[in-house]
Length: 64
Image 1 (cartoon, one colour):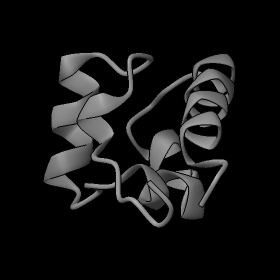
Image 2: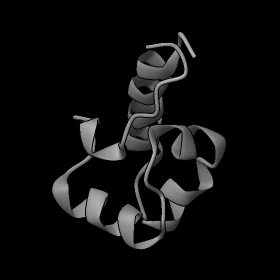
Image 3: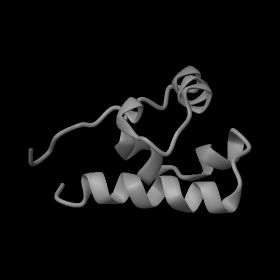
């Protein structure tokens, strides 16, 4: 869907605990992570994990 808004819960590269941490920080949409990748540093993810999460997020939203 062009312009679709995907929730972070659809990302398979994030654990349930990581998703919960992001939701507490009001990061609800995949687009939020793409627009503000520093939030992933804030929840103490490694550089490699951040790279993988952002790759999945970008792939999901590439048609937007």
